[in-house]
Image 1 (cartoon, one colour):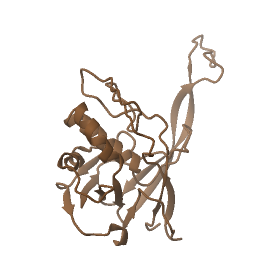
Image 2 (cartoon, helix red, strand yellow):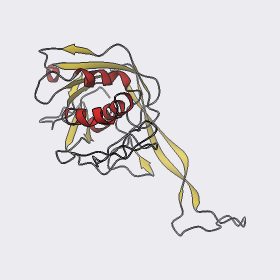
Image 3 (spheres, rainbow, N blue to C red):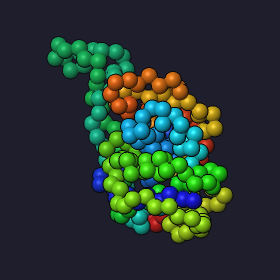
Length: 244
């Protein structure tokens, strides 16, 4: 049984690949399995609590995911001004008498504008029915990828039986290796939760929407936010066959 959720992007999408640097931020054109699963884990921690998040994590980790992007996807590239630590330590580069630890520079950034809805289908790795609590988490996802890449759920997630999304036009399975590639498509490496990623760590301070690795959660008091990344193992290559 598949759970299908449809979202309307309400902001530009951006998610740097694992190989990107702070200065060269080329974006992927779709959320990775890792980003989707961490968004579900974040929703579980916020709405159900830490104990429920621990119980749901094995099912989230092993989800099979398929995604459908709109027919039109535009990638916008730009240069932006950023600050970062100076290579030679704090100094007075400008002769103002002020010794500062940060210096100004420019960085390359890319943002994606979707020309329609983004649909995500999820299924348990065993093919069994997903827990009802996990299916409801799709309604609590507010952004995918970089913080600020907001998504608006269009309707209640629906359950669909006996369908092969790999044979459906426009749908791409992103949690398994691609055996073939169409020249009219775009090939990108997508990171996912590897088999050795069995632990996570919640935190109460804001963090990037990605993964972590310690099961002894230390968050208390305020609601835990999305876990911090601890170099997850990448194992998936997604072949996206969308029009250029």
